Amino acid sequence: MRLYETMYLVNPRLDSEGLSSIVNKLNNVIEKNNGVIIKVDEWGKRSLAYKVMKLDTAYYILLHYCGDPETPSKLQRAMKLEDGVIKYQTIKLKDEVDPEEIKAEMTPQKPAEENEDTVDQSDIGNEE
Image 1 (cartoon, helix red, strand yellow):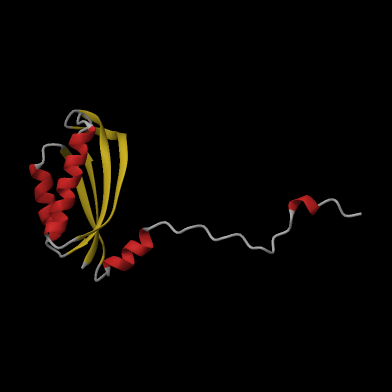
Image 2: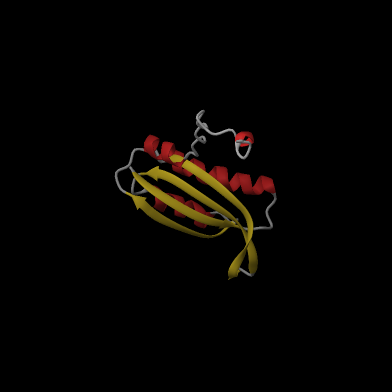
């Protein structure tokens, strides 16, 4: 499997149900083609650098997924057919990856516990 990253922009006039419907529909396209979704980042509504389809804002969605070489083309076809998607771009990040390893890398790690050998701050400056 290969690791891909797709950024797509959704029409800002859609309500939250319409937005979640598009995200779920595109995620299902990946899963139906034996792909594995690693991470979906919804960045929210942001302004565009230039107008696209007479719009100056859009919902930004960043999608990381693993799949066969045909998966991005099937996803792009689904985006072309979806009226709410106004722009998209896909990048291949890596060849021959294990989806479980990638998921482990992309999940945030818990902060390390503090050392028990730390100095008590109340003792500093009280030495006589």
